[in-house]
Length: 212
Image (cartoon, rainbow, N blue to C red; front, top):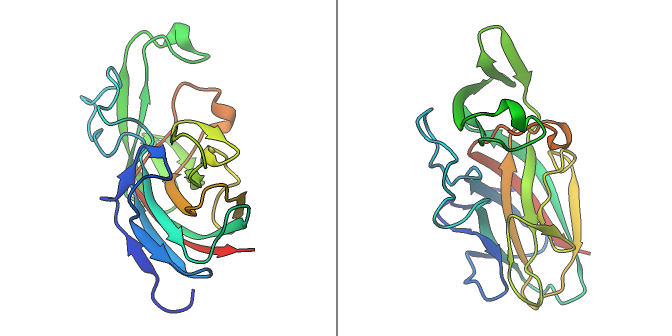
């Protein structure tokens, strides 16, 4: 990374990709940005007493942004390279009652807070999982109606793809007159979401955006 990257605080979040949203940051093509992000529940789950019984009042999957890229035009291709992902030292895994492929075994809502350290998640005594950070939400503002960050599409959005990680470049066609980027990383995802839970944590990561 050349120079000191600009930082966008997790205080600037949205729950929908919308070209009408006030901009949080304006950058030049090729500039590096450091995004501070929330987990999917906006940091409201911090103990086993915090359950997923009710939806968050503002929505789910908060994304940090939006970012305006100068001199980007409709139909330009935007390339966002993920340079680094740094995780918080705690995360949570939560299940919903009677939800998922193991719904018959999920007879109640439950939450577990876990430690993230040295590249591993300490789930319980004797059980650890390797950390494989990825960006859960990344996308551009659509030209038409706003799209909630919970949904994926041609604009990007809720990708939940383990290949969207450090070293990856996410390219997308810009449809809106506003070239905007919004992001939210995840530290770990169980393959293809076959289980009714995933680990989630606050994160910080660096990305470099350019038009091409």
